[in-house]
Image 1: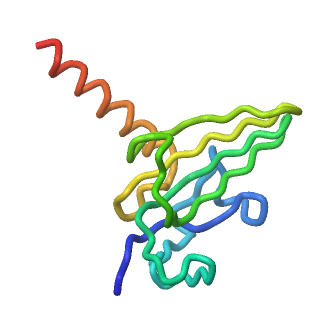
Image 2: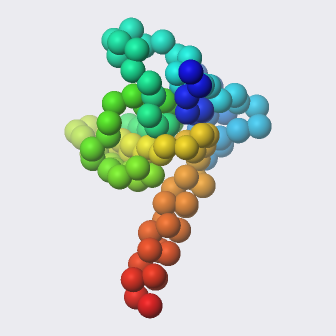
Length: 122
């Protein structure tokens, strides 16, 4: 069947996939259920993801499909891990078509949070 559609790219191999220079007009999305992952034994993709890896001064952005439940952040959320040797990874995931495009993803999360806080105040 048809599944969630996500951007699938890696800025190390395609500069159009970058964090600050993402070019959605020339990149295609993929139907995640059409991607075969033998080690997942026929599981369907359940979300899109965007991973930003910062290693010293180099930044790599990886966008793709996600199959396994993410427990560290709510849907539409992100979390960051910091490692040794100046390594930092920010991981975001969302569950609607083409939602892993770029900064609008993070902006919509921030807007939703702000609106929720405002409704609780008034």
